Amino acid sequence: MEKHSTSPFSLLSIICATFGHDYVVSRKVTDHINEYTCSHCGKEVADNMQGSVEILTLKIRNANNALASFYAKKTQKIPA
Ligand SMILES: [Zn+2]
Image 1: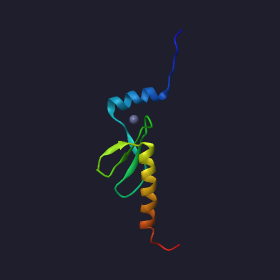
Image 2: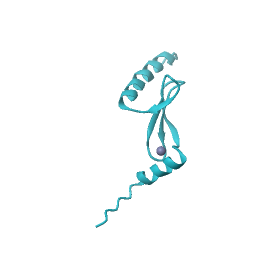
Image 3: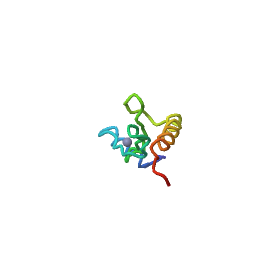
Image 4: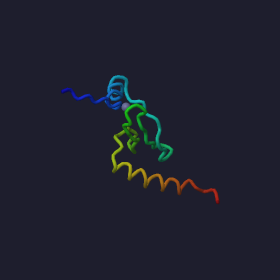
């Protein structure tokens, strides 16, 4: 018996592996740090302080959350 799993993700992962990921900005953390999601396979990465891109782990996401709220406070100077 052949089990046939046609997950769209596996096919798209092959496309990504062949042509590279198609990252789109999923969240702007600061002017210099963005989070990206691959529009094909859903892989998430983020810019880091060192200027390179790394896998968006829960730890990094939490760090970015803190950074984003800090950044929002810093830049929010317009009185409501
Ligand atoms: Zn991808």
